[in-house]
Image (cartoon, rainbow, N blue to C red):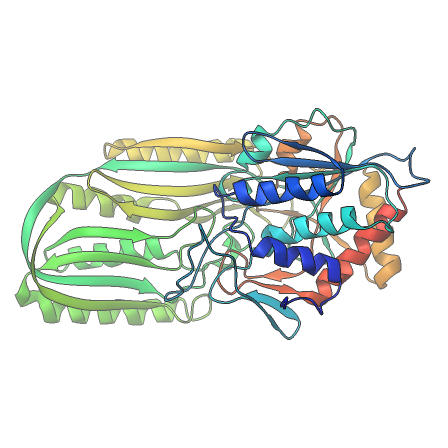
Length: 482
């Protein structure tokens, strides 16, 4: 029995459940890509699948719409794979465990993948229906959006005829996006060396943070576990000698890290001092983040007397210096659109290896020169302590256009269907619209979607009623494209 079989719109949730059963994290998209191809084959639809697993499916216009301008429906097939402690899912092999909680669709212990599985489900439901009136539909489903929009960057769209696009990759129903920031992924590597140390082993943990999407939720000032751990280590360094043998935190560059752990070695005589220092830090953070991260914790677990490889004093100093000085969070607010974050950075992934400290960050800005300036800061900081940076997934901002037929039409439809005033705005999070507009001349597009909360975290939840409203909006919009 399907979990979602009684939900409406029935076909949308049917396909969402199908998608959720297939592992489809970033860089693990072959299975979901093949599923989309088989969908097209079974319905005799024109399709294209490239070497990167991007898929384009085309359905010709329904009767009476043959002369209408084609409409592109666009989203991405990959999801951010985050899970709670104790959840034993293997994202490479296992599907999601969906369940309904009132008006919300959730996944037990993991992210839901509503970002952006709902776009795929909408598109499949439309193409599967013989009754829905529509112009020529050109459905573009990309890969690896969550790790730098790699699919949008690589995809060939020369087969498309449309210049109007619905990007279904936003998470606040009734809010329609008309521009977004550009961004890039910056990987910093700092060489380290080790020495042998003997003493009392201990594990430090920063836990209980809210996390969230580093674009849409960076303005909420949620704590970054990696940055907090840097502050913990600096405080301890000021009070005692210790060796650092291991450290890691965060899973995705565009998800604010919720946890970070560090293994240290101390003199046995410093045990009580360490306990006292950690307790004071825990109290300080609880006070500082009483609103943004009320459940923040700094935890300490002791081990036996150990002999471990730990960072040399010089390497430890470099690592702590980097974590205490790397830019993080909101850097600039927009001077044009009050309340909009203009430039930000999220140090999303931290990993100490045998050779290097590796930190992967998501950099965003709607002003290209400020994005470049932030990269310059990261580069100078890394090189100052003997490291280097590598840039990938650099994508442009999606710029606002004054006149938009698609914006006018969808605005009218929304008002008439729901007797509500639509909100048109910019967003700090990245969207594929900027890259795609560079591949299609005079692209007219808008981005929207149903209410989806706490995306990129295990608390992600998709509103069922909002999903139905957006479905009605899309169907009526297509009907008026005649």
